[in-house]
Image (cartoon, rainbow, N blue to C red; front, side):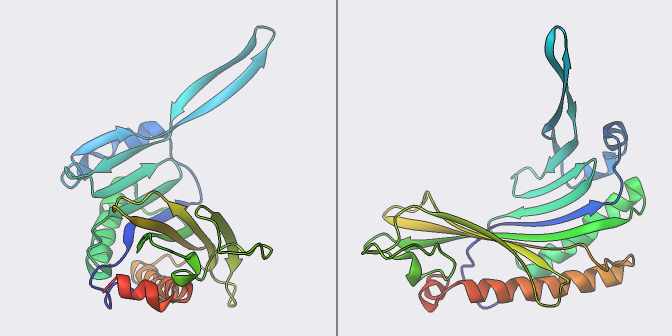
Length: 239
């Protein structure tokens, strides 16, 4: 998707590996020192709340579930939690080759810290923001993913949100596709969100070379979904 566009609309890209069995948080805390070289900033991730009922009412305890690591500019992120590893890149997107190399590096560091763990799910998520001139904008002019409503005259309203999960024909991949209007950081523009979350839970390889072959394939599928979801008017905005 990005090779053909001078200004790709990607605002965040995330690669997530979910594992078949969880770690405990104490293990994560003890074994992440090797990540400080690349991600000097560390914060505790969202906490889990366990509620208990008794004669005295409801009580509960909060437990940390992971750590979030970032570079000083906070554009590169690595999240290690009890069930998953996620590697994220915020805009500007450096291109697949650079992101792929970073994924490879971070996986190696993760394996150094926690060993090889069976993967139960791989997800590739790309969040795009399309900034269009606000004058007389119709979402249909830029996106092919939008709500279908009864004919009420005029165009689709200025605000909407849509989400659909679909299994692709070969039954290897599923995709959750979201589109919505979002606040635009660009004056006199209307922004649309196009969120593509492609994932697989079947036939996940164990060898590194086969995992990256799968990631390359997922990228091709993700790009095809992106191109099928936008119009030529949207493409002109990226060049």
